[in-house]
Length: 507
Image (cartoon, rainbow, N blue to C red; front, side, top):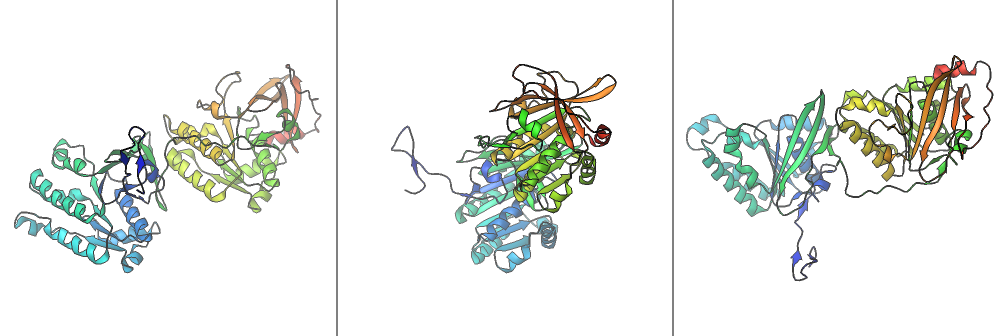
């Protein structure tokens, strides 16, 4: 039988997967192992601003676009307000209504009618039954059902009436979403807690603020007949609706390290045994003014000159300031920007939470399709939030780049120069394939920079400390300290005044 499979323990037993319908929310189907239970009831619980109504409308919208008619019942907002709010996301509900794929119904409760006698849902069921028959509805949303429940005198009456609605839904096999405000009041839970047991799937939506950073999380509390992701998962509300990105996937699917690609500096390519590996993660760490951004932009300029595309994410400088700063080192980014090979995006880390940063960065990666991604600087990511938030952002960004075969180039500002320390600042150095440390020191009243390659996975590299000189025409490397196995290089000469000009653009 189609959809059945034998169990390993007993070939006489058959497992029939539960029928499901897509949620319409990017990433949510993965958490639910396919979507909402088809022909059954799912309940969305959450406080103000959690996005309950958006989840529900997005579900109906995506279903209608696929030819599944749906009904939306509201007890709070007017139908016109829902249409207007949806248009701000580009959702034209009126067009779907005119095609008979969507019906919006404002079930306005008349308080005078309620006081005239016992409150009943028979009239609402009759309306829904007639409309569902006429339009062939397959999906239904009852928004803010807690407003309706407050009309009942006691929980017993509410339970009886809701059971009659539930029986009608079971008979019609309509996939239904119920939304309800979460309430920590024990008395309210005693009255409406039975809804958790009545629904086949329960999803908790949470909008929280910690250290002045707003984040949204969802957690699936139950799902009858199906496995599901049991962790908390971040989601964002953007200009196009709700999207959810799982914190981690079950399998790692990184692309293997590719061929060597030029770094933009022949001397650096020599001590790296050919340059940076494609699909790798490169981290350059050092103090302020050590030359991290200069090396990053040197790499970007070389990649774009080869006809490749690079995405530069700057958390410390505007695109204009970045372009101007590296000009003194002979690096010109404007030609690559005009050619469409380089895109620089810049924003303050604290302007939003790490989840939203990740969402917008991944969205840009998916649309721009870069070969290289630069994040400048890792240290600024600490301002996205506290705890694990910056770590999660960087881990997931590096993981996404590696899965897509993108070379990820990171810079990080650190203090000190102790070998063996975690130069990522967030304990994710194990994901780094090439680790380069830049140092600053004074020698005979002169500021000098040096470069040391700590590791390059899958290849040989120089073990010497090389002097790094930033000139008006780019980066020049020399060798002034030796170690066994190093690649000897003569310390280069430099033009008079070059160091002064480069000093202005060193990052």
